[in-house]
Image (cartoon, rainbow, N blue to C red):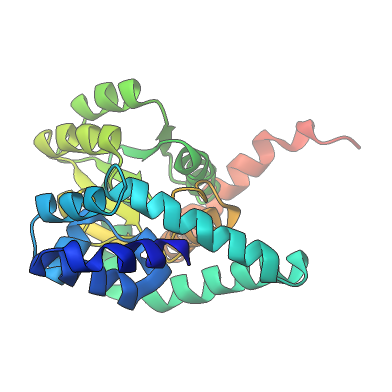
Amino acid sequence: MKYLNIIESCYSDLTKSEKNIADYIKKVGKEIIYQSLQEVTQEVKVGDATVIRFCKKIGFDGFQDLKLQIATEDLTIQSSTSGSYIDSIKNNFNQAVEKTISLIEEESLDQAIKVIEQANKVLIYGVGASGLAAQEAQASFLRVGKSAKAVIDPHFQNMESSTLTNKDVLIALSLSGRTRDMHESMSIAKESGAAIIAITNYVLSPIAQLSDIVLSTAVKESLIEGGSLSAKISQLLIIDILTTGYALKNEELSIELKQKIAKSILNKAME
């Protein structure tokens, strides 16, 4: 890997703390592309400035620039060594389901369902690819008889957050857990007293830390893999489990509302 050669060539010029960062990157390899600056500083026990200074000393603009280089090299290797792309996609989807299921904490899931049951208003926020998952979540909740509203524009998210009360709930979808606009709108919702449920990959992320309940997804994306379908599958799986759990705990009401919804669209189908 080219980045390892770069680190090795500069190793003797690094300080002790910078060498610890270099050793950590060599140890974890490509997994570094899925880690935040905060996670690295916690693991190596150095400050943000030390990591950034290390990156610049070995020729990169910063930590994100280094991760981009590593992600690009890893993608090139995968492309040259992978077999059938169909098998590769199948394996990615299977792993997304298995890893997501393995991370589910039933206590957190039950808490989330209870909060949603009691909520007067349910808002679902997502930006970019997560916005598509938010829209699917809106439809999924409606199918089980719970009205929810997907909001995917950051400006409208802020405005909607300001209208929430302690009787409402916000569901925030963010794989990275570090979307700035999302964090801002969640902070407004928090001040309004709303309960917050985060669906994210990173339990230590700012968005997760701001939330009352965290449901973990399991598909990590690098900087050049944003919006992958396997990542959305992980999000949609959590949503499906959440809405199914809600329907089972409110079975009589859900069935009644499902029938009403079905009748409302009967005339949309062709004979």
